[in-house]
Length: 206
Ligand SMILES: Cc1cc2nc3c(=O)[nH]c(=O)nc-3n(C[C@H](O)[C@H](O)[C@H](O)COP(=O)(O)O)c2cc1C
Image 1 (tube, rainbow, N blue to C red):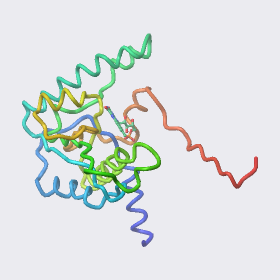
Image 2: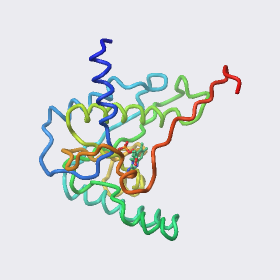
Image 3: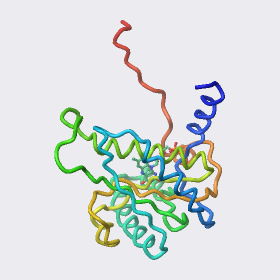
Image 4: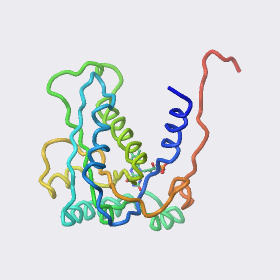
């Protein structure tokens, strides 16, 4: 790869953010198609491609997702106490009603055994996460904002939205970002900080 290509790749990786604030403008279908095309090139264990994507546009259906989020958030806040809970209550953790598109990404495992799943656990879920990450980068390169929402109940969602089989792993809010973010929102709100990579190099004796 050329130096400008490498620089462009790094610009996209550094610019990628988890967005939770969106403008209401629609996303042109060709842009959505390019974001979804990332799933075509994504790695997956045994080339299993164990994902399925449901596009959710209808505001009434997005309101159902939001209702599920409200329940899960109310439950999660109880795992924090004192000042931490007070800070949790101030966090914006989704953009479901603002983002014109929701992409529900579900784990849709292949029938029968999958090459590569006989060792480490969680490889099908990891494959879905790999694909979502590529879609996240593709969205960033298009100037779109994407936010990964995990604070929903998969079973509840399936019942509310009458979804095809598959275990929801991500609800992606997709649209035009309303905020320009140079750092993670959770960092800006004082919840957490990025930390240096811990590398253990077994060839280097301390
Ligand atoms: C698996 C996964 C689940 C996530 N779920 C949520 C979520 O439910 N709500 C939320 O606000 N952010 C969620 N995020 C986004 C993270 O909070 C975000 O990636 C992190 O704070 C770093 O910020 P950045 O993505 O802008 O670099 C999730 C991210 C990942 C990878």
